[in-house]
Length: 265
Image (cartoon, rainbow, N blue to C red; front, side, top):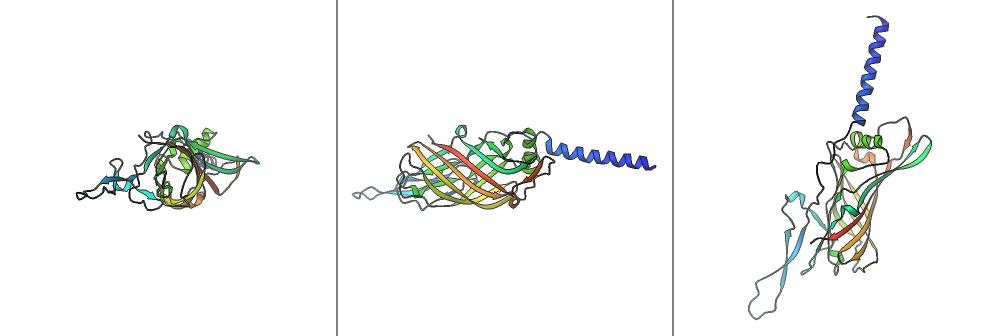
């Protein structure tokens, strides 16, 4: 083989490798597999007990699932122990009026920009007792990563194919473990703030994360809120592909969930 043939073969090999990488990064990702539904919460309900004749009525609290589901998928979190007789009202995130998003800063061709990725495909349930806010429960929050979009289709494909690998890992989940800072009472129209700690899973990596949450009771049947936190994308073993047009990318990613939840039933 002559030197010219060797150089030509090497050049073809390089082109094939680059072409394969480009196809992997920018190939059309899979669409969402179906509508996103909330993981059911297990709620306490008040059931009558057998009372001896002549004694006043009493109630006792038992736990029943809101819908059939495997035990591993019905986990909720209790902010504070529920007092006897408390009846929690179930609220569900309204996807048509809610948005999950990430924000990350980068320098694009010498110009600072903030990349924002958004989706309305977010699901979760919240249980509240207006007379006992500290008994609140929050269920697993799910986000369909295949539906995240930015202002650039090539970036969208890179995020889904090379960073989040959404063909393999469709959902991002947050499983609450502890609620702190809930008020003793709430007033319609007056916002309040608290913290939710839990486990955030992105691809196949789970890390503890704390969200700061601001909630406003809109009415007896509707609440709105904003949950925020900041994470390091490297903590989740995520890698951002190099791009000739991107000078630098910040290590921190801001995560936000802006939601409206309405009373179920």
